[in-house]
Every structure is written in C-alpha cells, then in structure tokens.
Amino acid sequence: MSSERIDWDNLRVFRIVAELGSMSAAATRLGESPPTVGRKIDDLEKALNTQLLIRSTRGVELTDAGRIALGHAHAMAESAKLINEEASDKSQPAEGVITLGTGDGLGPYWIAPRLPGFYAANPRIQIKMNVAPGAPDVESGEADIGIQFTEPKSHDTISRRLGTLHYISFASRDYLDQHGEPASVFEYFRHRCILHQSYVNQIERWAPKMSDLKKMINFAFVTNSASSMIEVCKNGGGIALLPSYIGRVAPTLIPLELPEVAPIEFWLTYTERVWRLPQGKIVLDWLNAIFEAEDAFWFSEHFIHPNREEHREEALKAFKPTAPSAG
Image (cartoon, rainbow, N blue to C red; front, side, top):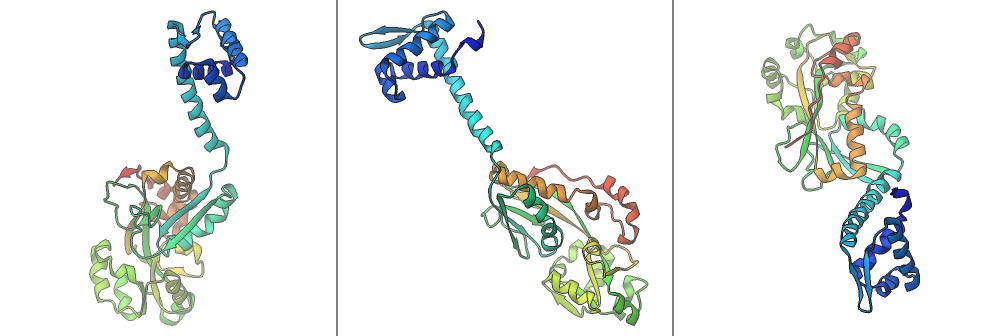
C-alpha cells in the first residue's frame, strides 16, 4: 500500500475521534457534520484495508489496528507541530532586539562601521549597543551579548576568545616633526604620552618590562574615552598606546617602528537563551565573522606591525579562534 493513498486529513480526524471516543463529539470540535466525520473514517479504513474503530450506540472503541494507527497518528501530529514551529522560524526573517555590551574601542571603531552590511541582510533585527568600561553583565540581562577583556568564569554563560588586541605606539606627523621619533620605549620619558584609563587598571596584562616602565611614565593625558584619546593624538598631543587596528581606521596616525607593547585578549560571552533566539544566533555568527574576516588579521594571536601588512597571511594562519565553551 502506498502512503499516497492515505488522506492525511482523514488521519487527523481519526485521531480526534479516537481521543474523544465519539463521532458526534469529534464533529463538534472539528466544526463538521457527523456524517462527514463518519465518511472520512470509512475512507481511511478503506485506504488501510483494515477496521480501526468499532462503532456502537455508546460511542467508538479502538481495534488493535486502531491502537497502532493512533500511536502513529500522535507521532505525526507532534512532527507536524515541530515542522510548523521550526520551519516558520526559518521562513520568516528573524526579528527582535539584541543588546550588545562592548568597550569604546571595538564598538565604535570595528563593529559600528560594519553594521550597515548587517542591516542590509537582516533588516528586522535591531542591535542596541551599550558602550561602557568594564565587563558587561550578560547573566543579569544587562546585555544579551558581551565583548570583554577579562576571561569569563561563570558556568552560566558560554564564551569564546574572539581575538587579541596588539597595543603599539602611534603619533601624528606634526608631533613627530616637532619632537622626533623615539628609538625605543625607554625614550618615552622625553615625550608626551597619552593613555586610556582602563590601561592603568590592567598593569598585569602588559609585557613585564613595559609594565614596570608604564608605572614610571608621566602621562600627559589620561582619559576614559578612546575617541578623545585618538583625537588628541591626531592633533599632535603626544604618543598614544593604541591597538594596531587603529592604523586602519585612523590612517593619519603613524605607527611607530617599536615593538608591541601589550597583547590583550578579548572574549565573546552570552547565555544559551540568547544562542537559541533566531536573532541572537544571527548576531553571534555575524560577530564571529567580522573578527575572522580577511581584514581582521589585526586580531590574530600573532602580532603583525601595520607597516608590514604584507605578512598578514602569516597572521591569519596563526589565528585559531577558540571553540565556544561554558564559563
């Protein structure tokens, strides 16, 4: 017997009749007449070439074949429900709001410029970006997704390392023309230096020699604003310690021919609830992609100086993002 002979609507009617134990009760629920319900049961029995129900004045009873058929009918109803739920999610564009917590460097200078491309592909998803110092609290719902510079430890969150920021020295052409370029970091004493407030609180993350030196440098300008720091540097205010990718977003700044100052890792963190949201998974996949793209070699574990971008393939090969893990 081919399954094409079975009218699936008749099987649905049979399931309801069997559950209610009455043709008339099933007819009432279905909004059909009792004779129509009876005819559909007859058609199903003919298609299966077996009796499914024993009719009497007291209602209906299942035969052995009927009990087997009812089990399959229940399974098919559940499958239909799952198909409806899952296929509906995929057939309609994902929509909703996702709150992203991040710092004032990666947020404005790497993520924000790539948002137009995201919105072109996902017009119904809104990203609310909260820019603030410190790690966003995804457990409390302060943010759905967080990018942070401390490794997540909570067992209630999922995290993966997104990459590494490589801090180097930048200055403007005007500043270098007036004050010259230091031959080493130990000549910083003779220069005006610019620092982000958060770096002051991350002494242990800096290279050992630089950590000691950093404690002794008299910084001319310390701020909690990355944009202010970059503007002061662009306008000749001094030498700024900035992530290497800033050389791409602020091309008027000149990366000095000095060693890397500090490699600072950063992580993506979120909850399973957010990952299960259609819009959450789309945003997470997008964030992973923009930090793994060809132009994202800046975030490789292997440092490549901006003046030697031709070696970026080496950096890309060395960049091995971690798999998501529970905190």
